[in-house]
Amino acid sequence: MTEAATILDTLVREVERSGFGAHGLHVLVGDDGAEHRWTADVREEIHSVTKAVSVLAAGIAQDEGLISLDSPVVDDLPDIRPGAGAEEVTLRQLLSMSSGIDLPWSETMMTDWPDLAAEFLSRPSQGRVFQYSNASTYTAMAVLAARVGDVRQYLEPRLFAPLGLEDLEWRRSPAGRVLAGEGIALRTEEMARLGRLIRDRGVWRGDRLVSSEIIDAMHSDWVRAGSTRGYERYALSGWDGPGPGWRLHGAYGQLIVFHERAVVTVSAADHLGADAFAAFVTGSLEH
Image (tube, rainbow, N blue to C red; front, top):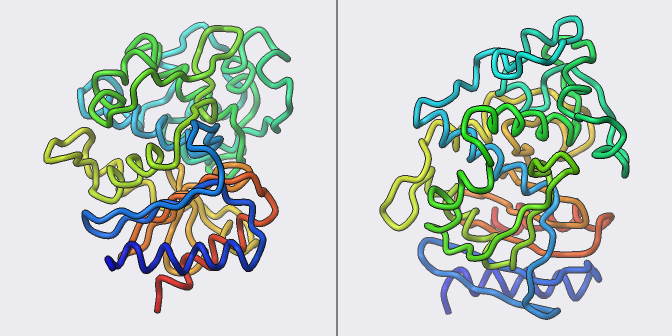
């Protein structure tokens, strides 16, 4: 039995013991993968794991010299009137939720204003302060679109096709932009391909798709986010912890957990149980 299969068995037992609402699990150790399913193997919304795709898009564009993560974003959106301090906000700050601009999530966020990105940047910034908002990632991809055109189309030959993510759709706002912080549906194993790319620091099957610097920034240069365990620090789409690992974390338990020994990918429908299961994953990988 491979180490991946052994780890999978441990996690499957914990799901069944705890009642965590997992739909699928995938474990990657080295080149060995192991998977278990409780529901049909279909594509499901990955929620905020999508934010990592937006980070990869920005990183690829920076690699190509099309954009800089550290330039003021209003330079690319000249028709926007920025709020106080927002004229200094960078793409890196938008993607790390550290713009200091507050625009809380709501179900009608995408339709409350004619242009969500313009509304977001019109608000004042409190400096490099953590403010988690899907509007922040959405604004980042609006900035990127100003340089590369449609973000979904831009990523097709650069990310989606190399990873074998065929016929992938990215839900859009009424303005026609990708939702950026959500809106992609993947099978568990397809989501695990993102995990493998990130684990391998931007290399996929021997080909570099994105620079290692953007991958490393997903779990470094942390921004202080709060005091709740597993939510103390945030980087470019990544949460620090719980424990010694780090993770991409989408609503209802969509997880990619990174540890030096393994990458564990989870599809689920259990918002309240996700934190405890993520902690179990990292704890079990320590032994």
